[in-house]
Amino acid sequence: MRNRRTVTTFLAAGAVAATLVPALAPATAAAAENPLRQYLQQKPTWKRCAKDSPATFQCATIKVPLDYGRPGGKKIDLAISRLRSSSTAERRGVLLTNPGGPGGEGVSMPLYLASELPASVKKAYDLVGFDPRGIGQSSPVGCGLTGDEWNWERPYKAKTFAKDVKWARTFAEKCGAKQGDRLRHMTTRNTARDMDVIRAVLGEKRISYLGYSYGTYLGAVYTQMFPRRADRFVLDSAIDPKRVWRGMIQVWAEGAEPAFARWNEWTAQHDAEFGLGATPDAVRKTFWDLVARADRKPIELDGTSLTGDDIRAGRAVFFSVRYAAEQIAELKRAAAGKPPATRKPGTPPRRVPPSFARAVPEDNSVAAFWTVLCADTRAWPRDPEQYRRDAIRDKARYPLYGDFASNIMPCAFWKKSGSEPATVIDNKVRALVLQNEWDSQTPLTSGVGLRRAMKGSRMVTVAGGEGHGVYGTKSCADKTATAYLTTGRLPAKDLTCRAAPAGKQAMNRLPVPTPPGIPGLRQGF
View 1 (cartoon, one colour):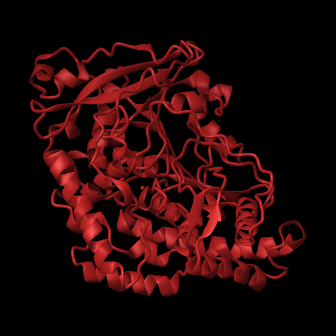
View 2 (tube, rainbow, N blue to C red):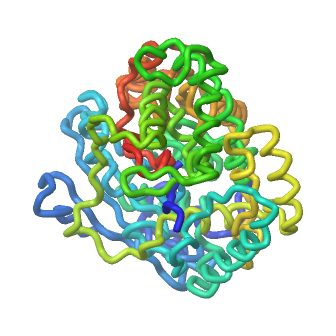
View 3 (cartoon, helix red, strand yellow):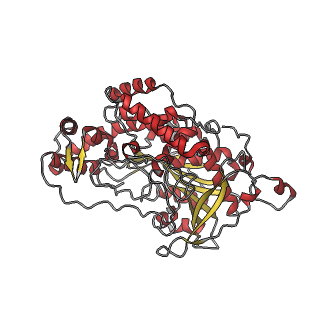
């Protein structure tokens, strides 16, 4: 069985009641007629999240409608959390947070960010987290996937394409059988409506927001649907709304190639340290020779058997040149039958405290990922042959990952399309977009796409910046983001600042879902 990989990693107001949620829920006759009144006037029962967590870290569960078009119908749970502002006098409001995904659990975000954000931000805001609908503690979805069905990163091969088509069809059918009509309502638009219910429940007229990766798209959708309730929005490592969603998977392949080329050059300059080649061409040859070697006979590493396709799928190693060089050097040692070098494992982020958590389907993360991606847009091709043609084309264009990104996906067979069309982002809401130059998960072109769609925004590009996630990493962009959150001042124009030199940047410890890299090797992102 292949390694189970998770991700990280991704319109005009409709005629549904939630688009008309009032800023607060006044006790008037009009409010009594509002079909969402029962949700907006909830009083959360806040409790300590866990015995081993800080007493100030509080959790609660509220209700939201499954279908905002039928608010009197089925209800689902929404898990929320908070760390109150450290200064009553300086408190401005709430800073709602999202780690990305889709599929990322967000209840524990306040705890993570409390150790990374500056004191001035923690004085200004209650840090608020939530598990988006269908994820973690918020009525989680599951499809009953088993074994190899988890693995959706599949390379294109003519001899296995029919098997991959069958897998995609089975994945979609299992989700449909398990979740039924719920699938239609697990959308970004409905999660944005859930955010507005959270705003009302917390008694706020407006919310500020910090969203990473997929969280940038969620934040952008909120600004499109509720522009007057968006206060200060920081959108970090951005999704291009015009490429939702197949295009955003394909952009991973586009972003991986220049990152790989940059790694070849840097690693050649450090041949004395890593021994992978003294020229970029020699480094490139070392890598592809390892891929070919693993295709002939899998490389055994720490109990994991790696094929060449496993190595190619680990494109995330090239987020950081030093990290990638360490990993490929380790792989080279394993291929030569040598023992692994001494290394310190990455410290995994803490998850939601177990005493707060309830049972979650084992496949929740991957099921939620595809549930959102397939429901958000109706633009997925339905013809398997289209995927075949695209995979062949993109493997030639982007040898590292192109065929993975364009191969058949479960959305080709999704029977429950979204309850609404995809959201078109086109507004003048003020927001701050943050982007690393060398983030191959949401490449620079993706950040530019969101900046273009949100005409009132400004963008800070971290030249030479590596990895997925900017704010909270001690980046040169942190100062601008903090000033915006605490004063409301956006830069007069888009800015560029410079990161530390390649190979000397600190490892990103943000709890942002990202690809795990090569199976069996140290994971640091």
